[in-house]
Length: 238
Image (cartoon, rainbow, N blue to C red):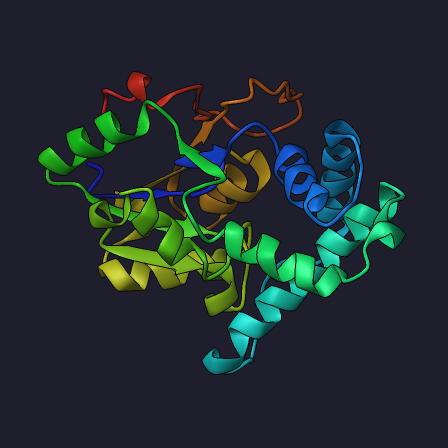
């Protein structure tokens, strides 16, 4: 029986309004930079995919916020470089500081419509809810701004743990907060590798929330109990 549900954050509970490229382009325009949002969106995901995991093992807690800021500064700067417009900025650090603060608010995000009904249903069933995410510490104000924070007993993020999904360590730390066995916990997230495979490796039950209807070749994978859904509404078995 499931006693605790771990949930991923971005892409699972909430997501960017429009696209990352659109948000970046709108703010960049205020700094005199002209670029197509589609080009910037593609450049962002290319930069993001090539970045190292956002985790800082062995670093004291007080230094983590600055390291998070610098990590995202590097990713964003590279995105604008790939898009060929970085040199249009007269003061990129000033722009980025505004961009970084923007993503700590509710403004660029929307909550998926199936989220609140699911969270309310599970809470009424007495299931503990927690977030396990590779997000940075801005997740705390974002969850609060989106009126989601009250649902979760704990929040575990990669930058504070020093390990990012799919590494088992981040799941282990989350389990310790709830003093429960992995077999009694279900993890749900939108990344097949980070969420589904990571949770299964750590001994948890897992469901891949395939919101984008991605196609995967599962033929070579030993996933007898593989479970995939496209929205929370179909999770009535819990």
